[in-house]
Image 1 (cartoon, helix red, strand yellow):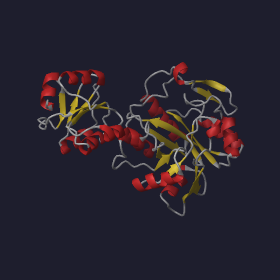
Image 2: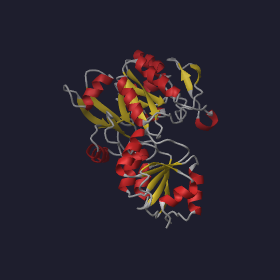
Image 3: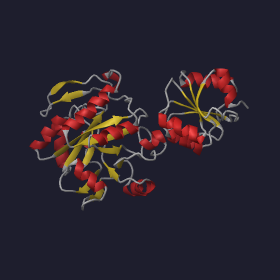
Image 4: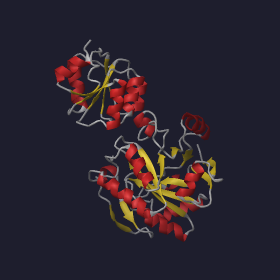
Length: 244
Length: 115
């Protein structure tokens, strides 16, 4: 699974990151499931889900929320209603208008890659929500919380906040594709009491599946992934792939 | 060397935690909003200027033995941050000025960075 993929809705995402191309590349990479996590928005999730259905690819909906401290947090959900409730809260706490020439276009598409419109919010910006609030809200909506690319200095919980605050209940930490598997294991799973996953954080087609995590689970659902992260009911993380 | 108390008085700043712990001398100043960077580069006795309000700032101040934290831009520290700062006796000071302005004023009072 590669649960951290952006679409053309993210200002920094390539415009070719449209549903059909994302699904095609994910299938070519042999992925069973992908996650769509644009910055502070979920408006392309349903389109990619529909495109995935046609090709037998499971698509999990999510948002990569930017906290007040400028920490990136992945929030993934089984139910769209919970995903869009988080989106509503994020929008309420996000100020500013996007300047497409500076930050990039934020294109909303349907499952056939047809352009439906653009999102004018400043999706690259930080919300007024704290890390603790994002984690609390996501969990209350039965979502999965993963701290993004913890090995990076900027926009990671460790870079922004120095260390992971005591008592913060993250489900997992994401290591980016930039560090090796050995590094990842030695640094993160031992230094912190959190299970580690790795996803691509793809902003362009070529990066989809660049790094991924193989779970031993019944089906690609948030509820199953949560069990795997806790090593519960026979579910587990099997291995990682695609590291540099 | 100037003390935190003198800084607060001269610049008319507001102390929001550990107001009784302002007599320490300030060895210098450090301004950054990346806590990982503050851990790496701030020096003992520094006053730290930041816009971050998360409770981790208190832990960083303890770890690096900083004399106090100045939070800029009129940002309000979170409740947990204040509780922890009070408990750990870390002085937190707030100002409506942005970082550039407060750093300039501190420099005028003789506070320097490490070079």
